[in-house]
Length: 523
Image (cartoon, rainbow, N blue to C red; front, side):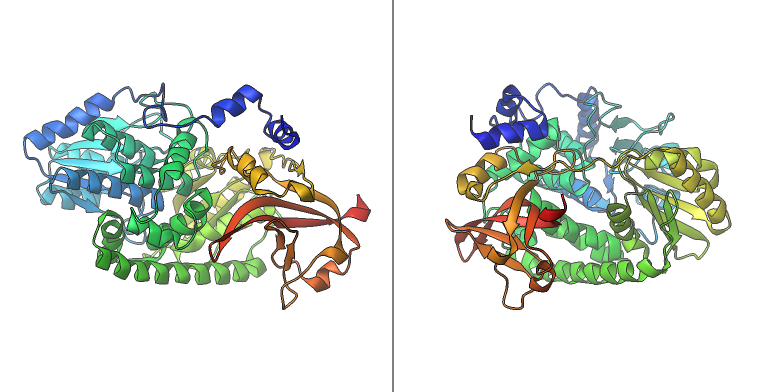
């Protein structure tokens, strides 16, 4: 066994048998082996009955990437059988989260017979009750944490309710499984959308989640799906480009766009094969994404001066648009490792809408449930959620939320690293590491340490702001924003980082990308 493989097995605490299982080929037939939704057949039958009777169908989704991708999967599914349907991407500033009574009334008045909710529904009691009272049937495809009481729907597809598996997955994954069961075949493009949803919603890359993402990445072919090629730009299609290029662009639409016509365009983009339309819409997507970057950067910078980070949790109101508060919350959790809840005033001026993020060890949704008497609405996952609260109840809620965080012991584990030697930065070793991919939530890419590196041996960019050191054999050590001036403080350093493959002008390079630097003399 190669020495580096031994160190990798030790790092992940897995056996040789585990390694063999994790690196075994994934096929269409075995990616979700031994996992079945108990009620899939009845849910598919519900749809088939509606089609047989030529019923009008309405899809109601969510405004985040998972919700948008879930709608797109169903729209493509219905396109493939040439059955007309209608859909709605909720406007986060007008509709809020989940099927509400106002939209349910519009659907009823539109003469629809079946509503399919995707990435929402489990908390939409009022909207679903109204639809049922007026004779509509409802199918819920959702993955959010269910309450003790469930809506009166005709079918609910959900990982735990349907006994599919204990590992959380995305709504896009469930919707894809539904489409696969309905069509009776595995659709490659729908699988790509589902894999993107798994990563975009930060689902743990274990078992069926990991298998689907791995299967999709390994089988992805350039120039086959123009929409995805445009979103990822020139990057390779992998978990990095999905998480850092594709998903943020889709999410940006739901965060910032506040008119129904523009929201529909992201579905048209993800479901169209028209090159002219795709190229045109892609320009708009990039424009919105650039705006999202600017807003997030400015909001995070402004918040540094005004947000109190001294308590057990961070709970604050900011003046920014509701669409970026989740990004602000995420940046503070990463920096301070504390539960963070950022609020913005809604358009009515009567409520605060909050977006919460938390480190492992604190359950956002459980906290909301304990304080639900103060909240108008709430929902989400263990590490991310949202809520709405009346302005006059905010102070009491803030104090009680911080108290709950103080009662929860959150232990930050020291990050493990794998010793690596400069002569091990090779294509073969990159392939060995990459055999354990895809990396992501609950299965992070391994971090390595290059110890006792002589600072005088490092080279820099022309402006002296970045480490760019060639070490031969198409290998490099790169460190962005580790300036020559800063590095002059040290004689020898330990470099913490990851290995990645870079392609520049069709030339592949293996790069050690530095994330942290420590003084070797101060061990």
